[in-house]
Length: 260
Image 1 (cartoon, helix red, strand yellow):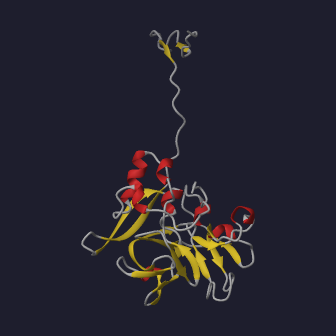
Image 2: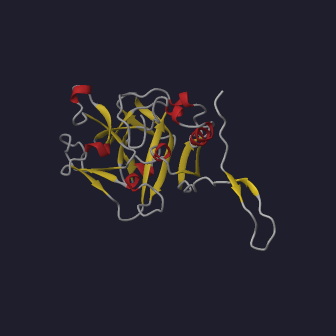
Image 3: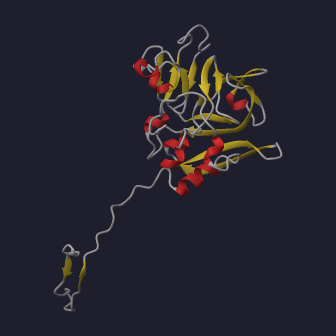
């Protein structure tokens, strides 16, 4: 049995007014913690009876939360069976065209506002990625595309050919920045960004570019405590447990600050 150790005693001989001092254990307060930055998230979703509902909630401005709301900038055109529709004009219950499953119903749409100068918010999380017209081929994108920090694009990631060969991988838009055809933008004022959930993870077309619907990633719950997981799932009324998100449709590279 090892020698026990004790906190250093604090001995005070006497107070300045002549009263006896005290002897005890010195208390060292824990380091002050900075308050966790919070953010307002807006959600639109389908109720069980099929009617749409709009709501909002305050939650941490953390990568796993932000990634669910930040793929598409305001004005991004998504392909639907009826033609292209701006992301802000989509509503739960409408269908979008997917490469994997054909027309798929939108179950959930999330949005949030990026405020570049917000106190305590990671400024990297406010950067957008601008993709010039025809960067990935004729009409890809058609007229340019501004992707949010949570966007992944189906592409052949630069520098990873040994790992993936010629296979296309869902790659964070920010990983494709080359300073010429794909550039990083820091918005000078607040901007609204969006993401959406379908019944299954799928590939969508945004301005001619193949992008993904939202999925938090396989095993994402292992990186969260029970309270944080419950809060995260509460943002998705159509999801009761992590496995309800299903599997991912393609291999993915991680977004900044996330394991998957």
